[in-house]
Amino acid sequence: MLRRWWSFWIGFLGIRIEGSQLEKFINMAASRGIPLYDLRREPSGRISAKVRMDGFRSLRHVARKSGSRMRIESRYGLPFYASSLKRQRSLVIGVISFVLTILIMSTFVWDVEVIGNDRVDKQQLLQAAAEKGIRLGRWRPLIDVREAEQAIMGAVPGLEWVGITAKGTRVVIEVQEKVLPKKPAVDGPCNIIATKDGIIQRLMVLVGEGKVVEGERVVKDQVLISGLIFQHKPTIRSQAEDKPEPPKLIDKVQARGEAWAKVSYDQWIEEPVVLEGTVPTGAVSEQWRIKWGNKEIIIKGPPSNPYPVGVEEVSLRTPSLWRNLGLPVEIIKAEYHELRAFRHERTAQEAMTAAQEKARQAVSVLLPPGARVLREMVLPQPAPPGMVKVKVSVETLEDIGQPQPIETST
Amino acid sequence: MAWERGKQRLQKALAGFLEMPKDVLLDYPKITMIGNVQLVLENHRGIVEYADERIRVGITGGQLEIIGEQLVLRTILPEELVVEGRIRQLNYFK
Image (tube, rainbow over all chains, first blue to last red):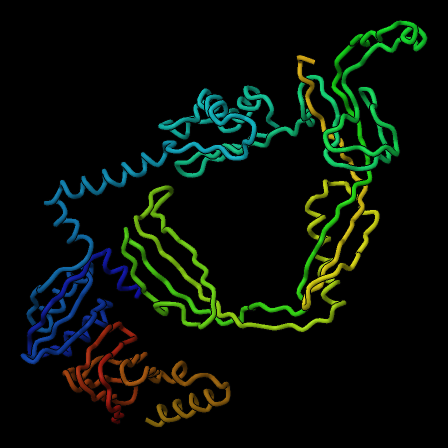
């Protein structure tokens, strides 16, 4: 194999030998080390063979000595192809210029991408990168990646780290933003109001004036901590006057604080004693379709749902050619899952436990982070036959305070 | 002649004693066949007859005859030759 590959580069000739002592010819050629390949006796008595170009000259001597005649029938190999290509100069020029164009074009930047920016504007990053030469159509060896990273770090505020990777014709700017301290939820002066009804257990006023005391029952939207600071007058003077003067507003502040309150949630849950439903049996059959425009062709699988009871799950796949170029063809994969009906007999107690679990889940969705469940109460309720009804009361301790801006008119 | 025979006996005894491959010491041909489609013959002494259905090759102490159909001498080198085709029979001659 390797020898053949080598002889292709050197070039080889197909020859035909005629004579009375052809065995002598072969032996003489072999003993002189001239490699002959593919010797074949032809019906006419001649021998066809192949010989490498560098051995052909000495083969002439052999032919003369053994009294045989030789004719070149065909030529193979690179030197002959090259000589024929000399006549087709424009083709060669075309091939070389094509390869060169691809090589040269691949050293330019064709795509700049930004990854990891969340708050920082992409245009701003691209602008800063462009000033350091990272922009479309730029020759890549001219770009100093490290310097550009430093420049972007300096030019764009709010960045923790910048990494630039040039991969092929594409430059990816990866940034990591600084994690800034949390901003207050509301600008300007605000009150803290209650989000839920409850009994205040603990009120912690950081800024502002507490309007409720611990143990007080509050309703939703009631002001817990006020951001309006009034001047407190001595009580004697206000009693002495006929009409009480409205207290003087000193300042408007942004109230801050926590209001931990006991909140109770009531849930009425009805649960059937006997559970009925369907479960998948595990049997699945797939169907593949191709969608072109409005036409749909099934390429594999059953034409419709093969199971008496089943669900269909459809997923779409759009083949993409390159980056964002796509084909106007969609491949649709439909999976049919067989379902089996089941009936689960439960005792009333089991049904009640299930109902309680449901109630707990329903409440847990409503709870803010940090809330703690204090007490859980389950009360059976009268229910229609075949059903179980429970009332589930859950008592939690949670922070019900929420800032609300004060309107400037007040 | 007596010399020659004695030398050959000594060589054979030596080959058996040293457990050396006989092709190395005694100049015997080594034939490797892949099925009936390819035959590699090392240590040949030249081609005696060459035809489409019969090739005779000189070897040490005689000749080797290859009979088959569409026989092609794929390569021939001073020490080695490769025959391809449908080989049916191999014969040794003194």
